[in-house]
Image (cartoon, rainbow, N blue to C red; front, side):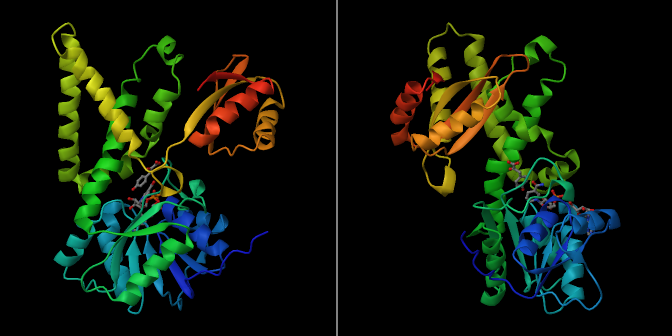
Length: 364
Ligand SMILES: NC(=O)C1=CN([C@@H]2O[C@H](COP(=O)(O)OP(=O)(O)OC[C@H]3O[C@@H](n4cnc5c(N)ncnc54)[C@H](O)[C@@H]3O)[C@@H](O)[C@H]2O)C=CC1
Ligand SMILES: O=C(O)C(=O)Cc1ccc(O)cc1
């Protein structure tokens, strides 16, 4: 067994707001032996996070070196201001999904922000609350840190240490650059998933019964909280509108082409849209943050006890590393589909060796 390295942070860390983000941070830091104190405006949420092992209840006399504000976006600035005032020696960071509005609000209020450093882990889940918290939520995820010209190096180092202790990858950006980036990679996907999923509300059951992974992949985050997202989107309205307008124009071009699909150039327009999507998705960083994509093979798995275990053990025996595994199983069907991701160079061998062991490969 490997011994985990010593944490970079030391002393007491205070977490304010003990929902999904706060409790996940608390769980991970407590798990590394750091003294975490928890505070939430809701005594019930705070007690729940303590019960889950995210830390101990905050008490008078705590002297935190670092405070992490994990409250909803519309109360971030006032909470940061209160924490800076109550703990004059502490560095205060926050994890809100939007970075420009809180810092502008703090400046408007005349708060000295030399000890405040905004940050944002690009990691989350569609369900909030301590009950959904996970200690490994931040592992290998980007953690944006927005320093100011005034930010002292030692204060910046504390927030970087926080990200590193949680297994995240710190990335420095300005608040403006952050907000423009997340408008594209986080906020637009949320609206698209919600809009797409809302098309399902009145769909006939017979149509929904045919739904497969394509629809599930593109609608997972449609289960997110409306209360949280209305705050996020309103706080980043201008960059989000720019992305939405570009998307609407692109959708309009495809709809126009399909409206008159016999017209010269119409099929080319549609093909170019799909090809452009191929180029875009190929640019997404893969596992470990590298620009590397995996190949997928789909294996038919009999709906009998032990079959999946046998497939996993066969993968081990043919010595092919499984980079990802997804299962699709239609209720009532006698077969499941196991979609296995492998490195491109391992694909031919995986297909050949699994077939030789009697597995049916549905598609490659
Ligand atoms: N949900 C997600 O996937 C992600 C959320 N974030 C950001 O993290 C922050 C927290 O989000 P979640 O943990 O998902 O929300 P959550 O709803 O799970 O937790 C928020 C907690 O803050 C508490 N709270 C509200 N007002 C407070 C106040 N004035 N003082 C102290 N506690 C207060 C609530 O009682 C609740 O327990 C938000 O700013 C969000 O933008 C960042 C990355 C991912
Ligand atoms: O569930 C996912 O894939 C997410 O991307 C969640 C998420 C929600 C809000 C953020 O500010 C960051 C990440």
